[in-house]
Amino acid sequence: MIIRSEERNAAGSVRALGRAVARLLQAPRPGSEEPSMLEIGADPVTFRPVESFAFSQCVCVLFERVPVLTDVERALERWTVAGKSKASEGDDGWAVSGTGLIVALPDGSYALVDLVGRAWPDDAAVASAPGLGAAFRAGMFGPGTTAGALKRATEQSWAWPEGTAAARSHGGFVRLRMGYGRPAGAPADYHGGTDPIYELALLTEISRSLVGMKGALGFFVPAGEALRSREQIEAAMGRKAGQGPPPIDMWSNIRAIALLQEEGERWLLIDLVGMGQLGLPDQEAIFADGKEQPDAVQGLLRNACMHVLSGRPIPAGSTSDDGAGRRWTASFATGVVAPKRDVVRWLPEQGPRPSEALLQKLTPR
Image 1 (tube, one colour):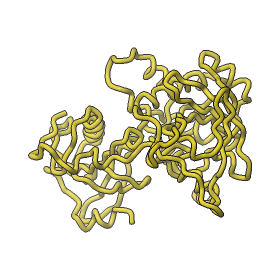
Image 2: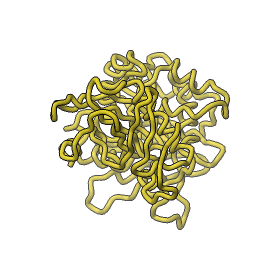
Image 3: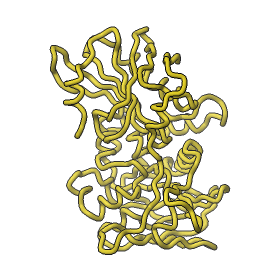
């Protein structure tokens, strides 16, 4: 992909727009309704207060109904299970942690694999309840994950069409989260992981042991709003390390959405969600129906993601051609479609472009 730019050292590069993919889980203020304790019993270490560790990534395996712990432990036999986690107390304790296992990893981190015996909390009214809302904000479903993630993934499951029915029939899930102990004296912005691709790949590899279990329906990445099949996971993770680019298409999702009819055109959006897990902004393109080729636009967004993943910025005003030879211009913006986040926005140079007034109207407040 060729990105054309007159700026050699753009202060407004995509790296400046990237959100941190992991947030320190702060202890709640007195009187708050946020979860206050997550006890994880592991030999020889026990993490007690929420502030003593941080989650950096999260993936899930959806099930018809949640499996029993002994079956999960058996499925993870090739991994080092260092201990078991306790279910957190309270009506919303399950959002913090269910009964589960701690998988010890060679770099000193751990994966918490816990069982949730209910459907993913997608209902906006339910997710807005104080305890559950606090769990979302604290990153208990993965840093950057927002309510409605599975619903949106279900509606936009183009990479795995059968994923829509699979997700709608689930009754429980196994949640896998990468965690790091917070060292004494660590800075306030400490979040643990420094290699998000390694972390996501490791959690996905652990998930391979679970997606083949009886009753497993599919693989779900909450912050990437991505649903993937067992076969897709096997194909992606079966490649030898170092051969080809990382499988970011397993952890992110392309979405196509009709926006509105205005200014004499029917406006469409194609975006890519999930790059926030890597500390980078998502990509979106807005164009008039029938004036651009959607497949070529999708390729433009995927290529732009690989471009920034290689460490090369996309300054505002940069241009690039899609697979159909149509030229696009990049700018920085707030994403039009939920979740609310920073994006690199691409607009066509040769076709109709939405006016500034229309873009303001589309931008969420």
